[in-house]
Length: 417
Image (cartoon, rainbow, N blue to C red; front, side, top):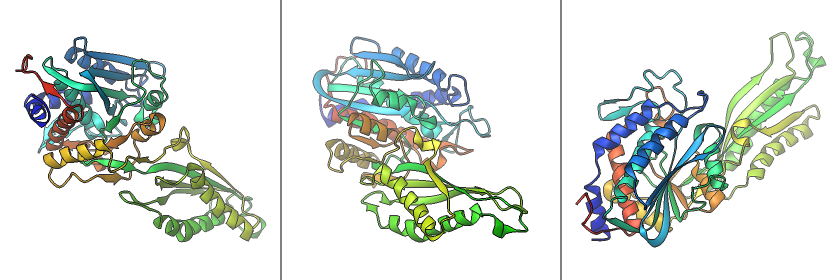
């Protein structure tokens, strides 16, 4: 038995109760930047679960050191016939609880799974592990390899994906023929997302007493002229730069901070921007556009003094956009599978938020998309949740897609029958 018929038969083997139980165990296991070893406990749990479920010569499970005691987890299932490598990717960490009540005590209520990491992205991780489990059955053969990479630190610097993409983790493939990152897209196939850059412009003036402001240089006034220029000139310029599924490039003035006391002319004022950039834009040009605004202000008023820098949140590495061609065979097939499972959701889309998928694609050349259960709006929230029907759909989509992409065959002799 092969082709779609094999995929249908494999779907009958999925234990959705077990997927939910695993997602709950992952939520109970904390893994975030406030802990001494971050997400290591989650990595150990996942590695143990994979080793239990994937015995035999066709499978291999390994931990790869990333940063101190932290680790990525990689599982490889070999199909037994030559063919492509399909990678499923998720991150192990979450943001901290941040005051979420019972953040690490998962509960199912009103068709939703609540808990920190439920949507970002432990439900997707449980679904992906189940996909490997199903395709590793003794009576299942396929072309190529099915790989799960679970990486450390996506929420705080992407140390795990940087190590993977740069080939610094032994036991993990350097490149795949296609990759699916399970960040929440409501199970839409996101073939592109925007790049991200946080920019700080720090204006320097001259402080003096507030009763004689003409003897000083007010840094807040210069910052105000800058924000006005951003709104009146940069915003319209960016709105004219568009992408077929991402819409326009954007900039947001998120923080303005300056001054000490009312009776003082402020000597410093900082403006912080969130810039989302499109495929086709260049990292250095994004910064240069902001520097050009400051230069124009300086030409109008030589007293303007400012430093433009990329902020720590994005300066560790280039947070580039992601784009996979709409006609890539993986995009076409995954969209078809999603459309069959979720009518009306099969057309590829773009998302505004950044993911590790951009690092994977840029570092290894792997064609990469994002497709996972739940809505990004619930991520990092104080009542984080994922719909159970989306978890079910994700598990079925991953199994169905992997079976078809890897041209799976079932002999009928395995323990599953």
